[in-house]
Structures are given as structure tokens and as C-alpha cells.
Image (cartoon, rainbow, N blue to C red; front, side, top):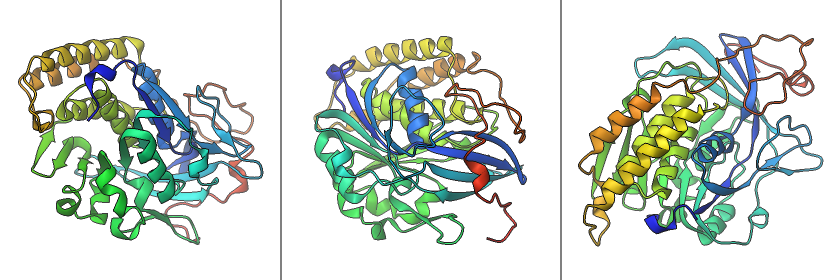
Length: 372
């Protein structure tokens, strides 16, 4: 658990590759965007003014500028995903999605990580770039490490790159679970792990779309309510959740309150295509509410076993209501969708969907029903 007195000096280590994402709805390309969990998490941490180092690898074709420069690998190309969506939304508020990795940049090796100490770490690979030995070194460098399970269990079809999931016990990472602070998984990804077994080894946070999330630990669990949203693109929802969740922990919130902050940022992300640009007024409101809640929680006596930080404290519902009120403020520029038009020059802003006229057309874009 991150101690209150480390904020605002806390410094994090984020590990995961940036990507190029192509979003294809009903067989039609609607946008190209900056992708990768690291990009969504960076937006949240920067919005909340938290310090961090980022280790990410890209190729020379990488088309975006960033506050944290990635490692450019000579002779390699940036990881590219095609995400296929149906317009219809199921009963759980999800759009049907088929994700394919078209190409992958080099993995992140232990030697790529800085030789320094960090208060918190986040292992957030999306394309198989995080290796067991890399995660092990992160655990050596960071006081607390939160891991997105997709970094551990994703496998890729050898023919068309379709993302599949392997059992966590067969991933090569299972032996590291007792050293992990928090393991984040989506409802779909829980099919690859035994929650009753894993919760005895580390705290597990499961996101459930419009139903919010559930936090599991060895002796209990708690359900955290959602924030209503108009879903446009589910890409990055879990990443933004994890960014908000860890930001809450770093700022001294109890786990349920941090999970609530995660739900807020997850709900903001799905309302936009690509990495969201958060409204400064909203961010200030959120910072104010977090500080107010932190001060309130400090007044409660701590238990030696830290159990109190896993329970909903008095005032939790009011914190939820306050964040809901803050969310009413406009949060980003209007959503921009684009059809292919090669006469348009791509904009340079990192946070806007754009066309990559020199990279994607070398690959065959298939619809969901087409054969590889």
C-alpha cells in the first residue's frame, strides 16, 4: 500500500509499448489513433499531475509526439493493432470487438529499465512486450507494482494475429503473483484465472463495464459502483481505469475510493475515440474532491493489518456523488471520426485521431467475416 506521506513526491515507472491503433466499425475504418495502455495511463497521470518515468518501444515509423519519448528501435516498426467493432452493444454495455495484432515491436528487456527506485510501478503491455524477467525487475525496483493481466496472458494467432488468452498458470508469470500489489482484469479475462486462488496471492480488481468493478482480496471483496456514460469507443477503458485507480492509491485514498476514481476515468475514456484530452476544469474538480476525501479518511483510525484501507469508509457515497457532479462538466473536444481520404494531411496533435498515410496501407485490412 502506498503511504500518504509520499505524495506529491511519489514517482512511478510505467512499462508498456505505444501502438498504432486502427479502429474499424462495421467493416469501415473510422479512425487511426495513438494506442497502447501506456498512452491512456499517461493521459490520466499527467492530468492529475503525478510524476513518472515511462519505458516504451516503437519503430522509426512512430507517428506521434509525446511528453515521454519512447525508445526507437532501428530496423523495427511500431506495434500495430486493428480493432474490429460491431455497432450493436450487448446487455453488459460492451461492443463486440475482435482485436488483431498486425505487427509487433521489440519486447522490453530488463536492461531497458532505469536503475533507480520508484514508489509505484505499472506493467501495462498490450502486444506481448513484457517478459517475466522484465516484470521481475520491476518488482525489484518499485515499492508497489500494479499489473494489467493483459500484459501476462495475451497470445496471438500465428496467421492473422487475432488476440487470444492463455491460462495465467501457463503464462510464465504465475510465480510472481505474491510480489504483485494489484492485478487488474476485465470480466472477460477472468476466464484465464481462478480468482479464488489468485486473491490469496495478491489483490485482484475486476472491471465489469457498466456494472463498475469488484475488488477481491484474501479475506473479502467489495463492489464499486459505476458512472453512467455514452460509450463511443471502448478502447482504453481498462487502461484509463487502471491509471485512475493507481493515481488514487498514490494520493493516499483507500482502495475502494481509488477504484471509484478508476471507474470515473474509465467512463470518461469510452466517450471518445482515441486517447482523451481531459478538460482542465474537470481535472481541477477531481483533484479538489480527492484532496477533500483524503483529508476525511485521515481522520479515521488505522488498523495495523491495513484492513481499513480495503473497506468502504464513511463518506464513500458522498465522494461518489461529488465525482459524478464533476463529470457533468465537458471533458474533451468533440469526437472526430474520419473515413479514408489520402488527400488529408495528418494533424500533429498527440491526442487527436488521425490518418497514418505511410504505414497502414502496406497491411491488408480484413473485415471480421473475411478469411486470412
